[in-house]
Length: 113
Image 1 (cartoon, rainbow, N blue to C red):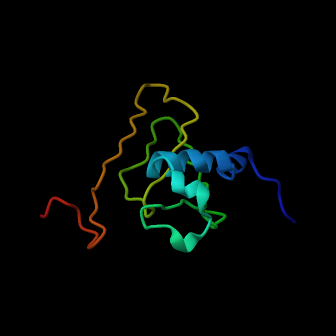
Image 2 (cartoon, rainbow, N blue to C red):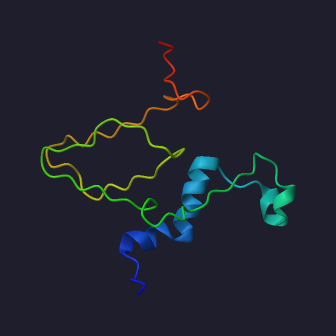
């Protein structure tokens, strides 16, 4: 029995959202992208994003009770899209992103300790 998609799943599968995220992450498409549909002719610079096929990991939800928080952690994907649906009531809804904290070659942090 296949259940209908939730509103969040519908948003995740919306091609316009994928196009928006692709534009933000990879930049605007080059004019050549519209003229040539042959994947073999695309250079490495002309990348494309794809949705995850993992039905559990593609669209996760975090719900926090008052006083709870999400501790510092490393995500395994190259990037994540976070949709905050409610502002923190006490103004503590600090969201931080640190670029290039992990070296992809050896998975150590960049401070060379």
